Image (cartoon, rainbow, N blue to C red; front, side):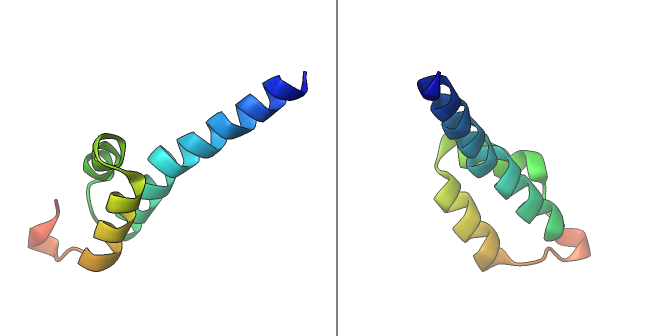
Length: 64
């Protein structure tokens, strides 16, 4: 029973790190949430998070 709970917690943490965190960061910076979630899934969540922090907010004509 404990292994099942631990597995679910690890799965929830993975979903948060790979999907929810980059999505919320991208939306807060007026960037494409789907694009940054794909970057997170294909490359690494660390790459997506650092990329979003470095790029900052998108200009109105620069939304990607």
